[in-house]
Image (tube, rainbow, N blue to C red; front, side):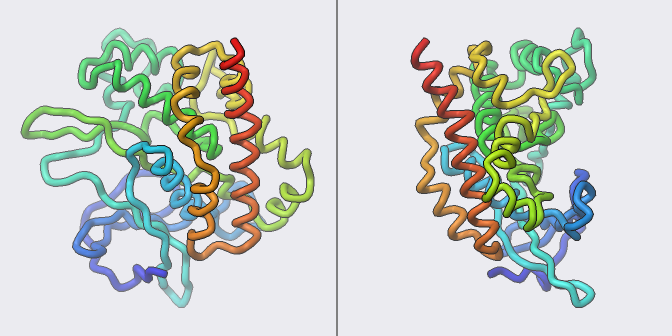
Length: 293
């Protein structure tokens, strides 16, 4: 277990809404240290489990071969309290800055919505019309991210938490590693909710077929992952389904959970159950349906 308490702190700051963040130096590399946010939707839980969700979610992205930020789980002690924190390696460097998709979307002069509007048609049009990244590379990348977000139940993927690395010296742009997965795997679920999901089929199915919804909207309504993917109505989504599902190795994902520090046996069972069920009932179901077309 890593104790981040006494590491050097840099003056760099980070934006974002979920929990406090500081920049620390670990093994001579800068990391964004994320602290757990308050569980505003669950008064029975003092702090959300977003740091654990961040760690597991990012490792699942890596397991299917998608470039993702490096994350480390550990603790930080302050005022006699010890909190579980996640360290996210800072993938920017001097002269190379992170620009979110919202910023790129703002360059599309004829776009009907602002950069942070998450209407799917607008996002796809932006990807096709922008000139910074070849659309034949960016569009599949977006949909691969969407499929893995469906697996891990990420409800907060928006235009501000995925994007690009811009080199200010060469004027070159590349897709940034995946980051900000702290809203996956039901971070506000307390022990009673976890036990209910493990014991009650209806409670489990509710967290497969009904929640969480995607942060992406269609016709101004947040997308239901099961309904949207299983409809097979979006060819780009279908293509991503065919790419990603064969790369999902549940034994590897179980190993990620088994080796995640600082989680309880109950949490481990909950995460494994949720992920196995979402893979089977959303992704596998849609994958086999697509193969039969």
